[in-house]
Length: 278
Length: 195
Image 1 (cartoon, chains in turn orange, cyan):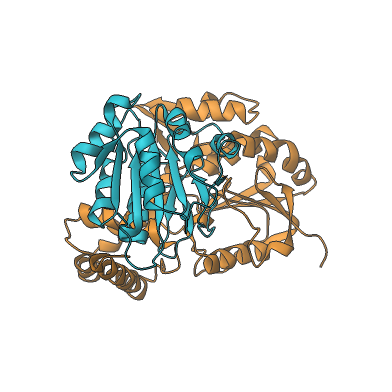
Image 2 (tube, helix red, strand yellow):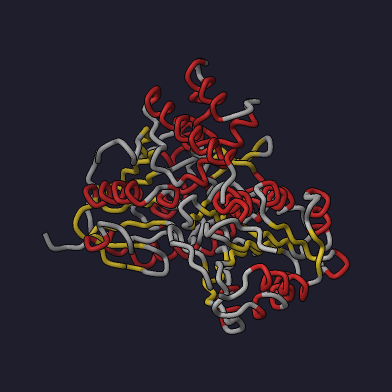
């Protein structure tokens, strides 16, 4: 049995999410509650609030409060070439299909600070597809998009990125793509010359382009099942027939309302292919 | 002693780090197949390696053992291991969530994340167990288990390969009981008698 403090807190939490939605149109109401609560607990402590109600008061009445709250609500921590076997599968199994298209559009949905975008840009350059590809990197958090656009990462993360890239079957040296200074690695801006960065919400926005590949990893786990269905519905709508969808290694379309619209292209790596028939 | 009031759901959460496999081997195989609660386990494992814990313990345990999957409904008689590189959380509707949030105490999965969310969901129906380990992950989580009215158990530090984790848990959670591994297994079986 839960104690009454916990129950009060749950009410306050729902009211806070409602307030954020009504005032700023950022909709976290259908996110998985346990994780959102943990993040807002951190925000509450960070802003020196004694309760979610007090945090709600700040969110509603203080200017800029939403831009300070959003980073707490949307933290996703990724690495370049995270899960190298996923990128190896893209390289060895998906790229040969993509090579048959004269032009390509790739959507990195929930790109966060850009680690996945740069991984794909490097992979596409290595495979000779970069010049015919447009990348769409989207996120709801504009601060994250700015980070993605900057392409600057702490140097102490580069050993892992380099090892991941090698294990993904990388055909070049990762160090070819960045310069270093002040303890940071700055990725070559030519890697993002074919990228459109855009504010986009899987919760409330519509499809904006027809794509051949969508990579959306470790985003769906934050959504409840209804919201997952909405997001996968968008992907289904955006992808061309026989287009590819890559999701996180612990995510699945198995329980999705759209499961029948996709086939498991690489089950282990969670890469799906949209069915070809009309 | 039965801590859970009425028939609300109950569960066991266990956290362990260095020396975890030996310690868990002294507990999990002693729980019967019909154990009337779920057991959720976080073991610190390297992020770049597929966790083999579920396979390893499935062969040794009467209970069903599996790796936790996002959105699955938590069931009694089942041991759930956190997958490597993901936090394991319990939702208020007693389903599982995984998350890719930042590591806590340099760990993902982190024991604190499981214990805190499970304490929220199960309240006084929860039993938290901190075993061997070399950092202080789990100490805050165990205190939250106790604060919500749950039962807090800690492996007696002198019996643990890594003493930092049980020592931190005992220092942070004043009501926690220090027990040997066989005593912990016995306490769990007493706490969750088969009807």
